[in-house]
Image 1: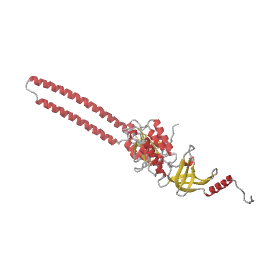
Image 2: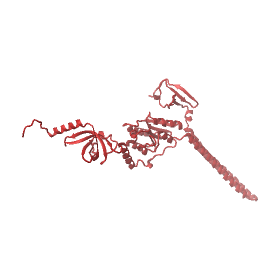
Image 3: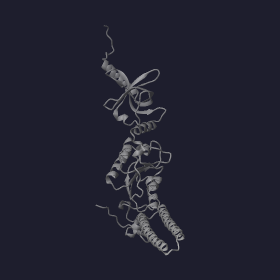
Image 4: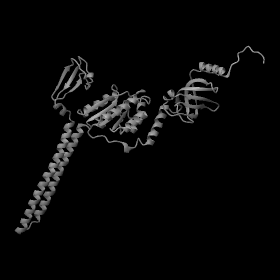
Amino acid sequence: MSSTPHPILSIQQLNELIRETLEDNFVHVWVRGEISNLSRPGSGHWYFTLKDEASQVRCVMFRTANRRVPFQPEHGQQVICAGRISLYEARGDVQLICDSMEAEGYGGLQLAFEQLKKKLDHEGLFLSEHKKALPPHPQCIGIITSATGAAIHDILNVLQRRAHGVRVILRPVLVQGDQAPGQIVTAIEELNRHGACDVIIAGRGGGSLEDLQAFNDERVARAMFASSCPIISAVGHETDFTIADFVADLRAPTPSAAAELVVKNRQELEQHLDQLLIRLNTAIHTRLNNKQQQLNALSKRLRTPQACLDRQQQRWLDLTRRLQLGMDRNLERHNHQLQRLAERLNALSPLSTLQRGFSIVTSNDKSHTLIRDVRQLEPGQSVSIQFHRGYATATVDTTTEPS
């Protein structure tokens, strides 16, 4: 064997040099191809091949990276992967270590939405038989949304206008970002454990598909389905649909519309009460007219013989007593019904709460924000106080939080 000035490399040394060369020169590349030979072992890593008409390359996507992929890749699917080129030294195979993956042609987020929608629909989570009815007159409403977004202000404005006496429990959460789904799930579970809420509104303002992803999360969908308290989904604008909309007991096109669905307008209750009074009066007059007609018919049938006259007179007296007794009972029953309706209307009125010595405190500025927590106040802040009779303006000297 002839001597040579070049060093002789082992296979391992050669592969190490190739790997280092590849990793130094192909730090970040984008590759388009069709998925084949997809494998998802128990380790959570993805192993697959990307191919086109002329060639193919082995790929690996480790668990920490594939968790961020919003859809489940499938055999034959066209994707675009980003990552670095390396060499699997044990076999001498060139491979692409993927950091991200996007579906080509059909957005990844939209694909994930359709996949999850199909899955949950197949499980029956969207069936109407699982939808819970909303209470007609809720006394406590739970709200799950951002404490600083427009949605909470829209909801509270509607509630202040339509139902001052309703109690509100706000459970502030993030409504977008990686931590948002977990916070929404926790809020749903906490309000259910609390047990005070008659209905829950979960929502946010409108946004892009990316902004609404928290309400397309499978964990949020399953938490809504498991809730024992009825949930209204109020996400975005009228054209925005999320997975939460399909699972919730009722979908509202906007947060304001959700609040309007929950509480009836006081004017509507008064109109309903007026209608009941009209129906009651009509029923009484109709019954009186019918009885009068019966009496008139009986009087025409009277004959001159005294005995017949006496019998008919006695019958008339009996009918009169029965009529009076029936009308008294009917009137008493309707009066009870009217009294119950009046009590319910009075219970909904904010004046009842103010008459008992309570007052309503709002910020003395353009927003007129309702003060529910001492942490909303600062020394020197001007506030407006509404009493049963009249208003007053006060300035905060000090604030003390509960221990």
